[in-house]
Length: 229
Image 1 (cartoon, rainbow, N blue to C red):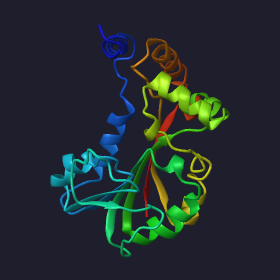
Image 2 (image 1 turned 90 degrees about the vertical axis):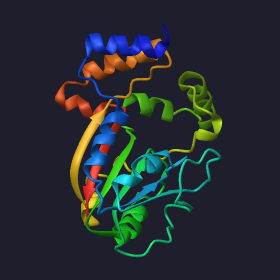
Image 3 (image 1 turned 30 degrees about the horizontal axis):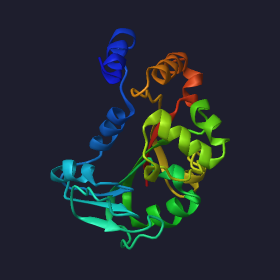
């Protein structure tokens, strides 16, 4: 039995209602996509999500600072997402999947850029890591080089997939976005469960169970936030 099969078996037995972070994110994203929507996926990686969902929307485009050698679909634009060549009031939905934790100036990204290119009532869907979680905070205090080695070893992440993180969005999301004319529509905290390593999975599952207590949910490893302009 593989580690993943073992982990899923434990989940079905102990927490059958558990939903992985990508499942929850998918629901929030799909809820806001339809055949009238123009959608931008910022930090799209190989653009597989655009390939999968482009028939659901009027227009979809992936944007990333690098071109992935295994690119799935076009249209795809290489651009710094803090300096997008997109005209004002032209986009209905913007999604950022594990991107905002790498942004050093979220005030600029949301205030000057996303607010500008989104149409009135436009939606921003974000999934990111949560610096309030001990799982994220404790490794964060380690030197960056050591943190990279730990991530490579424990989570099977390639070196070129690890980027410098700031987590400035975490303290920013509730207060500053309202000042920039964004309203928080949905917010959900999710505990990631790594299925590559049984020991890590067991620790994370225990933390998920502990943080079922309402006031402790803000200490889970990820959160999804949906904003309306």
